[in-house]
Length: 401
Image 1 (cartoon, one colour):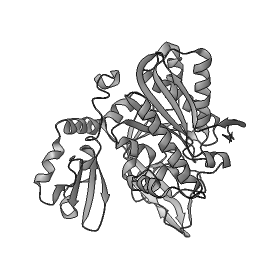
Image 2: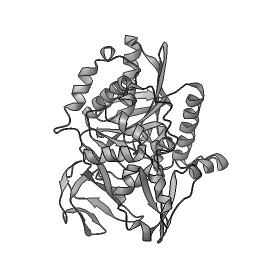
Image 3: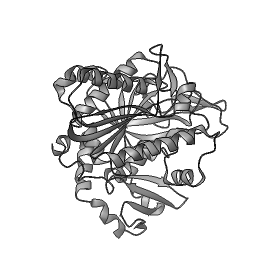
Image 4: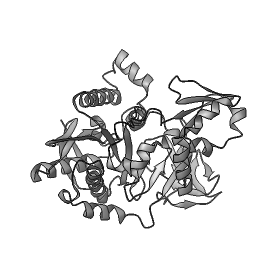
């Protein structure tokens, strides 16, 4: 057990790996929330603790199960993002295999935490019945409205469309090893929720409302049992304009040893122009290569993601991509020269860059593929749809609409 502190609430609480577990008296989905994967983001942990207390005290009727899992306990206790390595960049098959083969060294706190989280998660999956839903609760270093970060599968899209806040697609193309990308590759509904700035008291409130809405959307509780309308209106009030979907198209990655700092005053979703000064790297200005919106600018000591740039995704393209994925249009691609399957599951393609130049990145995105360049001549594009556990969620209300 460790003691963690919230600057936003000026409050401390004691927590263990399992923040809480609430079991319903009827069969239903199993919800798994993660809070505090980054130790300087305790808002999600405090929100989960509060919701579990409310559920217990009110004896809220529920179907299925809900779990809350704390992330980097060592980092939470010390109020830092991580010790040596970002815990939300370690969830790859190779890293986990190495973790089990060699075991983490006692001075590598982040890997010790990862192994314990993995074992906790495995016990829940072995014990409970699906369908399973996974949610990672975060906050940001810059001021922001709440938003969702979503790996681009149709199951994720359909479920997240229920929330009255922006959805950001495509983050998996730019980050290696996020926890929920690892889970999403196993076919489950899984996405992140960013509630606001680290030390903003509203971030805890936003997390609480998100948790209650999620319980309703997944079919675990009835609207009237959790003041659904109140929580829905509260989250919707944070969005000044209509619900929008955005896609990431650029990430400035900070190199090892680089002296990087953002220009002061940027907030999430702020419009930027081509040529605008955004940051300073080793004494030189970094300017925007195109117009768009700044996304998650780095205003904290640790982290390698300097800033992202996003653009709005028109509804027509979301509709078109749903059709193309349904008819499996991507299965035509290997008939073209320079493109071939590299997986028996047919979820990944090797593409010769001489061929790829005839297709825009947006074209591959329409088909549900995200690309990773592996050398100067080839890239790998990987699809989320093949792994999706469509049968698990076929009877869910949100998936039948």
